[in-house]
Image (tube, rainbow, N blue to C red; front, side):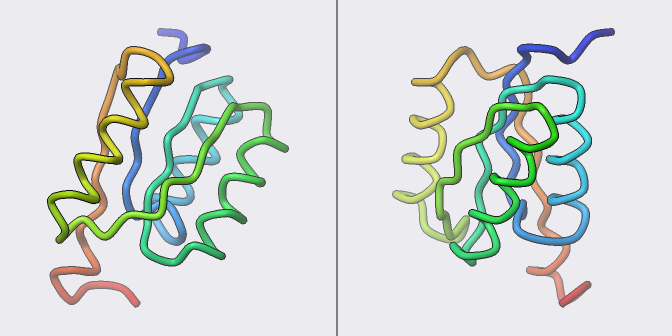
Length: 97
């Protein structure tokens, strides 16, 4: 299965599993809509994804805020049909940093 030109929305993309997934998908030529609360770290992940060969936009998002989540989805859909939505909620459950 090729992931080239597939679009993914990834939350928790500023660190850990979300960041690693984003970079791995970027290396395969995916289009990424990246979300996290930490804007500076999120921008770095987006830059790393671009350097790895993917397309990426950063959408600062607090997933506990319904309006922010709606904006994230709208950003993803406006880029292209979204193929997959991945969420990394481990930190919200007290696991990780």
